[in-house]
Structure formats: structure tokens, C-alpha cells
Length: 253
Ligand SMILES: O=C(O)CCCC[C@@H]1SC[C@@H]2NC(=O)N[C@@H]21
Image (cartoon, rainbow, N blue to C red; front, top):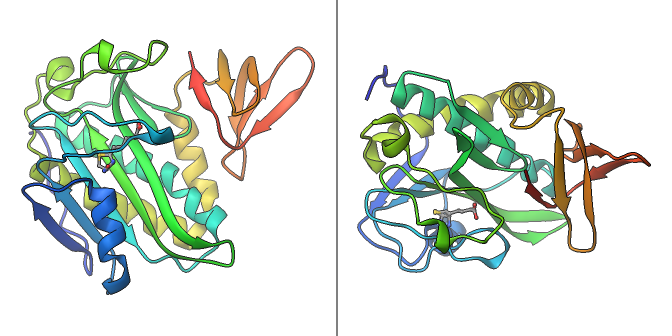
């Protein structure tokens, strides 16, 4: 790995499990007894989950971890953590490879390398609109192996691995030691200054900004120009007829 290793963040727990069903499921189990934020890394997951109820393929050597925390703010602020985590992933990849070239962020929360999907984030929480009891940021990275294209949905981006695209050999533990300090830096920025600087940094690294993309929501499909991400984290798309601020969708290029 080509990097200067930042120190592990103060007050943040680190557990490494040889095997677990899902680090997000483990996060939910340990949440009631949390005394501070905690990273849970698993070397193997037997029931890893992806977004929208999909399974996540987790081959040997890939990174699977969850950061679990107790929030102090509202659920909509918690949802913005997917942008915080995406930026931390981006920095960890730059630190691990010594280059920024080729890494981009796909709304709402994937990291791409050379246009293929390198990492995904699954944000889960429990509680009510009045207050969440915990939230968990689950992160899967194809460090060593990408699932074969037939294991993902037909229109999904081609999965890629860090190893095959860059030649960088990074273990899950090494990657966690890059990601946790990067996350802590962006988390401090978010809690101190709010979403504005996170949004700007995210937009600087965005894939397909200003280009035509398709967003599929539970009810509709919009094809239009990806204008920006607004102050609430919505995807802003303009079509010939109108401007749409979309809170949740699957995006296709
Ligand atoms: O669908 C996606 O893009 C999100 C994938 C998230 C996978 C990670 S692996 C670690 C954590 N534990 C899980 O069960 N899922 C997330």
C-alpha cells in the first residue's frame, strides 16, 4: 500500500470477526450496549445484504464492515451519512493506491473505479422519526475480487475490484485502518459545519454530473440531466418539461 497511515480515531471501537451473518445484523445486535461508535469488520459474511433487499456477494479477501453509532440528530441528517461515508471511502482508496484517477462517486452511495462499481454502502437505522436508537453504515468493497457480472442485475454497472483495476493488494484490516480515520475526519466536518462542505466535496467527485442519466423510483422513471445534489441530498434532474428533486431512486447510466 502506498500511504501514510493516519492514527485510529480516538474513542472509536474496532472489532474484527472471523465470520458473521452480516456486519449490519451484528450492528443491530450490539447497538443497545454501545458506549461509543464502533467499527465491526468481518473476514467472512454468510448472509451479507445489499440495498433494496438484494444479497451482496462477499468473496474472500473483500472488505465488509459496519460503523454503528447512536445519533443525536434527526433521521434526515442521519441519511446524509451516506455522502460522508462515500467521501471517506474515496480518501481511503486514494491513500491505498496513491492515486485519485478513476475514482468517482455515484448518487446516492456507490464508489466507482474506471466506471465500474467498486464499493457499496447500506445505511440502516432503527427508531422513529422522533429519534433513532442507532444507525449503521455498512460498507462492502471489492478489494480482491469482483463478483461476476451474472451475479448482479442486468442493468447494473460492471463490478470491478481494486486489485484488478490498480494492482493494489490491500487486506481488509489495512483498508479499515485507512477508512476509519478518513470517516472520522468527514464526520467531524459534518457535525461542525453541516452538509454544505460535504455536498461540495461530493459534487467535485460525482460521476455523470451534467450528463443525462436515468433515475428509477418506486413509481416513476425520469431521464434527464443530472444538475446537482441539493441541500437535502436529493438528486436534482432536469427533463425537457421540469425539474425533479428525487429523494430515493436507483440510478442508471
Ligand atoms: O447494495 C449495495 O451497494 C450495498 C452493499 C453493502 C454491503 C455491505 S458488506 C458490509 C455490510 N454488511 C452487510 O450485510 N451489508 C453491508
